[in-house]
Image (cartoon, rainbow over all chains, first blue to last red; front, top):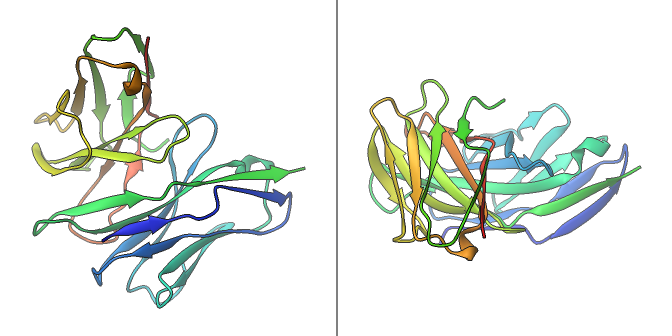
Length: 118
Length: 115
């Protein structure tokens, strides 16, 4: 069954250091997309980065990069040079085929709460 | 700003009441998704509409219903409200071309408090 697992409920990182947030997934669909979203304390969900299952290279967006290891079914988010404003909840999500032809669905992990320390 | 708008931002009501949450998708997006996020919980997918028609259904209670109108805005109706319905309700939209690159963009959410 399709599943997203985030095993780290909470993480601390020192300002200016890099941090890796773990995400593993499970799907039988060869074509899927992986996403990371940030939810600060204000509540909004902010799209950060996307990785396609057929992408040969790891996705990068500014200080965010996605460490995609297809054989291990992992899609870890790496935040470089952490800033205080990175303190938030981070969700990993996957999009793959739905139960009927032509449909797709998104599933989300339970999230990792990141706290950046000054 | 994601381009997805949701109203109202906050809603406080009593048990047994009915409320309507409204969502306008990004320009050009045909799909609208509704999610519920209870306190310190992940996102629970409720329902998806594509170009006016229901496309996928998640863990949506029978007391809840949704629709998408010809102008593509969507409404989520919650009735016979219970204390446990207090949550942050998100709307998201995407183009939904059928590609796995399709990305959901979220609105700011409606925080519902049932007293």
